[in-house]
Image 1: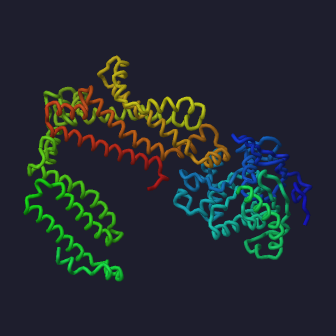
Image 2: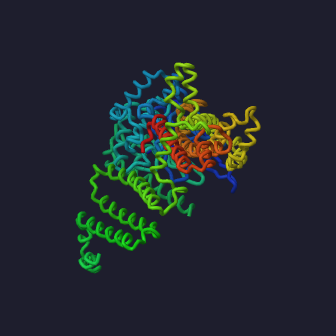
Image 3: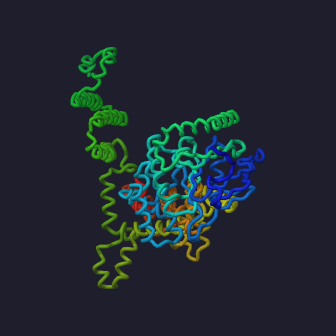
Length: 272
Length: 361
């Protein structure tokens, strides 16, 4: 297994996301706090990159900066636009779903298109198509309060996909779900990714999830958030949840955990 | 009573036989009925009910509560709604009945607590007859409309309706409510979003908010060319609603989960779109909670203002009957205020269901 800190799997291709020396420092009353320190990451087109690390390693902050929802203190982040200038550069799937309770399921899915001025008939057709793909057609007219957590997160995911962004940013999207629903949605994410091959940056707490979904797993350290190590996941696609039972998966898991486990312990001791 | 205590098992036996606690409903109710009979017999026979009437009623109340609890345990889910409604409506009806009985028996003076039947009679009088001296009628004189239509056309008919106290009060509350709530909500949203505006205005608004609005009524009167007209009354209602809605909406906007704002921005909502699709709907539950509070405040203010300075209105009517010492009609006025409160609250709830269809429960 090759290990290069920043290079994407397919080094020949022009990267879709280029992050250089990204640093985020919060100024607090107690003095400056470094959340992210000199973080470098390139993501290739159609690559699925997972970032894992202990709580407080700045992985969510990095994603928010990438999404344009937060500012960086120094460094550069660039997402290469596609051929269609109307397409948004990124869409985020949030951990807390962030599905609007005041909009019906279909209105939520069509929200990004609506904000971009896509005519109603067209955006509803796109939304209906995505609802069908995840088996939510029946619930198009429901409000989020009437559906389960797993369904809400499906809505949140296809809201991002219906928006057809250049890159998809996912911030612990399955973190709030119970273990069984999580497995079902992991399978569904794998299936959808096989069909769309979006460029994805995926933040997660779960190492299993990172290996299962990602082409690369980035391990970050906490306080300050630094890139510690990059692991290429060489398990062939298409993968399913059963992939987790293969020997290669266990091997990778052990290898990454030997590093991540130490980091998590260190972070815990620092907080104590 | 002694019969039941004799039959009851000893505490130790009861503890070891929990099934015993689930006596059949009929038996339990029969025992309660017995207890009620004894309780009432003691009070009536000894004549104590006259001097200790509150204790007598309280005892009966406790017995009814226990009986209702027993019944409540076995009510099937299908009948639950009926059971709850019976309790909710039954108590006020029983309380009104008790009031009637106590005043009829001469325990309380009808001067302070006129019987509900006399209040109802007064309410009927106020509705169907016109007091020429005070120019008082509750809903105008609709019975004269046919003649007025023939004599003066629609203007004459309108005059007969417009003189009603209920319409005068409702009109002032409505106008003041709208004039206060809309700017209040808008300023509250701005203050919720913009920290600079919030820091500059928050203290001032909090200071004015606690000021009793009736206290600034004289000043507001001075500002109008016609100090005794409708202007000052509507403005003082609007002011009381405005400050409450500003503070409330600001709190609602500040409480919006930031993830909704992030999602809105990330999916391309900017400026007005962000307001329309994210900020306003997200703050809507708090805004409606504020509107309900504001409605109560608006009624308090308008009734006080009508006490002070009005020739028309439910508050004026109530106060007029105080001046001529007619307690039945004073109570009738209070009753009308309560009905107005209930009706307006229901209207607001209806509006809320229309505006916020996603919010159930």
